[in-house]
Length: 219
Length: 224
Image (cartoon, rainbow over all chains, first blue to last red; front, side, top):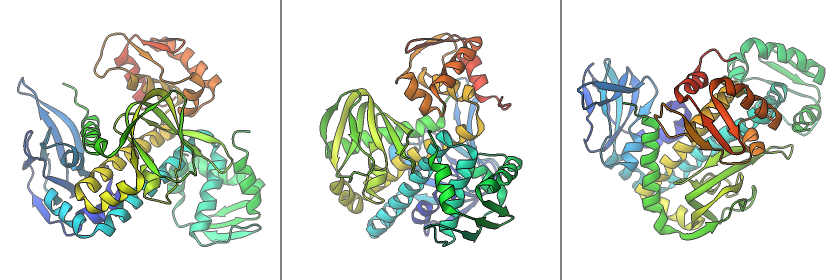
């Protein structure tokens, strides 16, 4: 799982955890070892695999920069169910179970903050998923623009709103589930709703028209 | 040998949840179609699912409620609301009868602040939910309705089977269609087109004649 998705969580869990450089071919853990650590890949590649009774190996997954692994095993299992090996020279952050538990015990306030951040991230994803299921692409773009305006501090009560987008168009396209070229076409179509996007500059002539367009979902 | 590392990780978390959280709650039977909680209600209790199947419906501003979450054993209903604004974010309905352990929300919060092991377990439970949600959103963006339907049917089947397999659709077709992000009419059309891939559906019973072939269709890069 990409660490960027769980930034606040990893900030807490990996705070003060040591960084280790390991050479290609180094075993991080073997099947049956106590599951007492989890790892964040800063750079390099790590493979997880299982040994087969016939002597062969089955590759399960390759983790690379920004991904972490071993947390579920640390939480739910006493021993690693698989082998972990550095495929290349790796820089890893290694958090031991004891250190993580000690950190959480020492700062209980951070526990609720961490769970709150993770919950909010999940609820945001669930909202995006709901929108993907029932809203048209232009309705999803309208939702996105309203949230971007809110993030930019614009007043969304009613009437005209101007603001600057804080991300590039290709990221907006990915966020609403469109190819970049289709986003450009959708922006052009949205001028009929009084929505004008020029690079990062956005003009919404009438916020209410956006809301009405979104609210027509399921009609 | 096929080993699904995500499923292995998730089952470890689920087993830990059932082991550690069940003693905190009181058992409660849930009937099919029972609404467990409604979106916007205060989270006074969270529910550890021990059996049954539940669907979480997210309300949009338009008032439409959209199925976004399919929950089974080892999940903790109400957890995200407990650690955000204290309100249930979804309306949750049982689509199959089952049993839950009802845990006092305040007690769980208090325990999590005092017990680092428990806090870490809640982190892992939320991580599993988040990963599933990210996966579902990715499927909505990248896969066709046909591929999403094929993938869902395969998830109902026992893993690693190469011969014909029968599965029971776990909810009415109209709800399943909405869960997969399409209308009931589209779902019926998709099921008809999947006949060519060896899928036949009679009522709630589906037969998959060639699971590996259907799997190839579900994961093909060239989304139609």
